Image 1 (tube, rainbow, N blue to C red):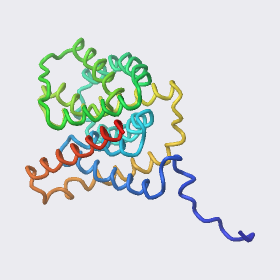
Image 2: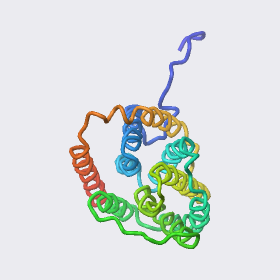
Image 3: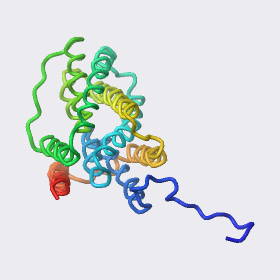
Length: 257
C-alpha cells in the first residue's frame, strides 16, 4: 500500500480466530434480540444465547464467553432494579457459589467435548419442555446450598437464570425477583469467568467481541418491550420452544458426528 494512505479497517483483527466478520455481525444482532427477549419476558434470553453460541464455539470456549456476555447483561438489569434487591439472598447465594464454581469448573474441563455438548443440549431441552423443580426452602443455609449447587451446574450447562428464578420466586415483589435474579446470575457468571481464567482460558482474545455484544444487548434491553408488543404471548412461547428444540438437536447432531 502506498505511503500516506490510511490503512483499511480490519474487523478480523479484533475477532477470535474461529469467528468470521459475518458470524460476528450475526452474533451482535443475536445479542440484541436475546436481550430484548429477556427485557420483555424477564427470562429466556440467557438460554437462547447459550444455544446460539453453542453453534459457533466449542464447549471449552462456549461457557466462559457466554458467562462474559451474560455478566454484562445481568449487571445492567441489577443496577436498574437496585432499589428492590434482596441483599441477604444475594450475599448467602454468592458465598455458596464460590466453592460451586471451583468444583464445577474442574468437572467441566475433565468432560469429553462431545459429552459436554450433549449435556448442554439436554439441559436446554429440559429447561424448555420439562417441569421446573419446586423449591420451598429459604434462609441463609438454603441460599448457601442453592448457590453452591446452581453455580456448580452453571459451570457445566451455562444458563442458570431459570433455576435461580425458581429458587427465589418466594420474594413478594416481581421487581425484587427479577432484580435479585439478575444480581445472583451476575455473581455466578463473574465466578464462572474467573474460574475459567484461573484454569488458563484466554479472555483477552474474546473481549472486543463480547464488549460489542454487551453493547447491542443493552440496546435490545431498551427496545425489548416495544419490539415484542405486537406478538401474542402464547404464539411466541410455542415458537420460542420450537426454535430452542431445533438448536438443541443440532448441538446433539454435531456432537455425535
